[in-house]
Length: 128
Image (cartoon, rainbow, N blue to C red):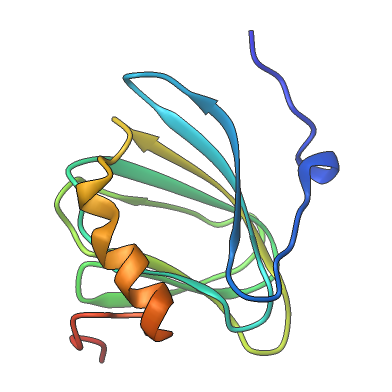
């Protein structure tokens, strides 16, 4: 069994969102995500499903072509191969638990790295 305390794992970074890995196997990856105001995980579409459970704060989750408003208690599931991204609102922190199955490959995270480097939520320029 793997058990962590979400609040004790809390870690923020002034430059980009913080992802604290809670568990990883060949079948699943569980991450505690901590976002300062305006921070984001850039839009990408890996071949894995993701479940995002918002614990605190508000923001948006990109689900295909839709930017869904989220708040504490919301759970969003985005299927494999569908565009997804997470962005905290500008006026507060966002904390969420993210579960991906199976874990995305390093190559599938290239759009994430590119977007973070350029400071773009949608590094492909498809944002609405």
